[in-house]
Image (cartoon, rainbow, N blue to C red):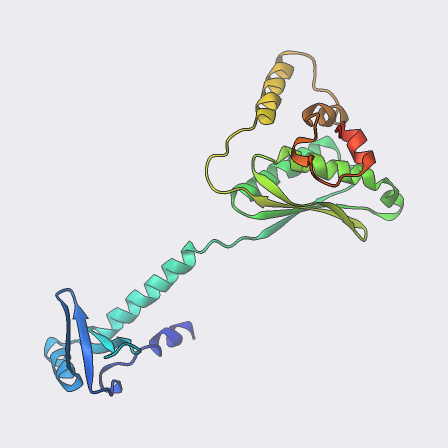
Length: 233
């Protein structure tokens, strides 16, 4: 069907019924009567193909019609391949997600953002766990903070029914410049390799978050979440 659409876009040979046409080629262009253009095509063993019917006079080429269609299909395929298709990838958490599962999903989110896709992360509250929605908010804020080098927050955590959503979009292509906060985290990680074992996840959140809120400075965050994240107003 798609090939037929391309084929039906152009008039060929006797289908061209105007008085004169403009012939274009490597040597330039010239306006000739349509009958003469048809004779030229016949003498060269090619077709008269109308490529711009709305021009005055219509623009045509002397070319093998099968070869012309092949070139058009190839060009359309290349254009389609160059089009960037942005998908929305979902990451699901529970309010009590453990550290191993968190790091696993964080890794996948980084890959999604690096590939140019958006990420919709959400915490699903089952039953009475909705009473601890602040834990879900803290988890999503930490998630956004850990991904700041790869994506930007499009929508801060918000509760919709039994789910709390966070939306992230990829940053522009190119090598991301590391923030001072990221450099501090790397330095801290190197020190921890040589020193005592890593502290608990809750402690990491407190120390990783900048004192003034950083990424969340102007965001609407609940008081409970700010207290857990150690963000000062």
